[in-house]
Length: 82
Image 1: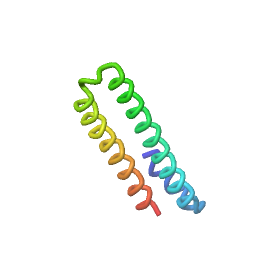
Image 2 (image 1 turned 90 degrees about the vertical axis):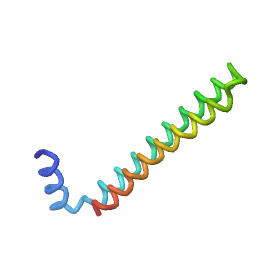
Image 3 (image 1 turned 30 degrees about the vertical axis):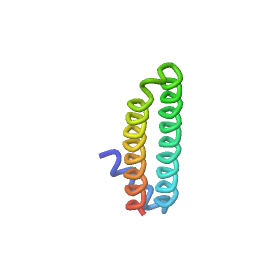
Image 4 (image 1 turned 135 degrees about the vertical axis):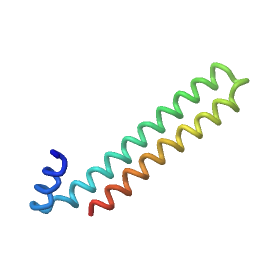
């Protein structure tokens, strides 16, 4: 209810483009931070246990793909707002 009211007010003030760009930017920044933390943690894990490098790398790639998928979905939703 509140969200629809805010969207109507923003549309009346023609701020939808600004809001969509801001939302897409925040989604991309969040994804970048998340993937950076995933990579950092994976490198620390590989440094501690080099024998488990393959398993850690696989888990890292899957987690990074999930984060990137969510970010892509958020950018697409922000594009639909326009």
